[in-house]
Length: 289
Image (cartoon, rainbow, N blue to C red; front, side, top):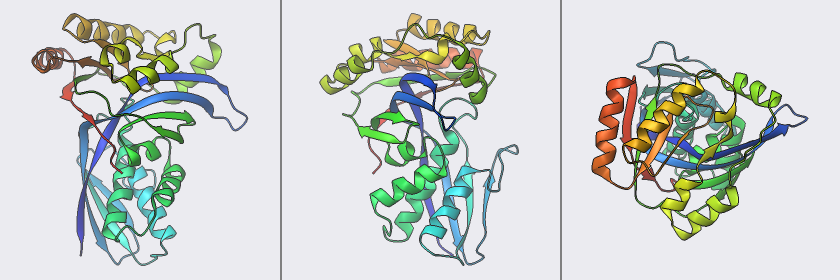
């Protein structure tokens, strides 16, 4: 039996904008997304059972088709006509669940990359991205990695210049936020402020970290929800400890701040970890494919 390993890197939203619902029930979105070094670790053992299952250190994570990693493996085997091939996907989870960091999508993306490597790059980049889109939201970005503009439902991706060197402090409070709940809430609201996406893209092209930080913005923070008070408190703590900018990622509940001083970032991470269940210091990661 062959075993392959792969890291599943978390994603952050440097900016996130949402328009009204589309006819298919989804929303058009415009996001600037970044891969970071915080990751789950996957070990995939191939067998000839024709069955796929997941094993994880967290009891509440599903092990069947509800797990995107399992779904991705089954889609890969179907696409490559390997009906007899099975796999056990062992996942060591480090990305917080329900944090807006695409932990499940990152696991699925890691499976796609790992399987394609195991089978001598049988699928082209285009085929891998199509498979990722079928698997779930954010999976295509997580397969590609790096810095990117994501549009549509997140499947229209444009590579961007790598983020300048920095340290990223990520903090998650002791609650998660339901993604469908936030989308319903945002549909009831008239958004008055939107991210300066054009300015963000120009700052990234110029490699100007200060201007990137000034333009970080997430429209979901404007939803009237008592939990956003905690998000605002974490942002304030990050800024007060030296962050150039801070914002919530995805639909939350994780918040992150960008630091140019690594020492200050480590101190901020330690301080937040004393107050909240999860806090860490991460680095930007470039393109994975």
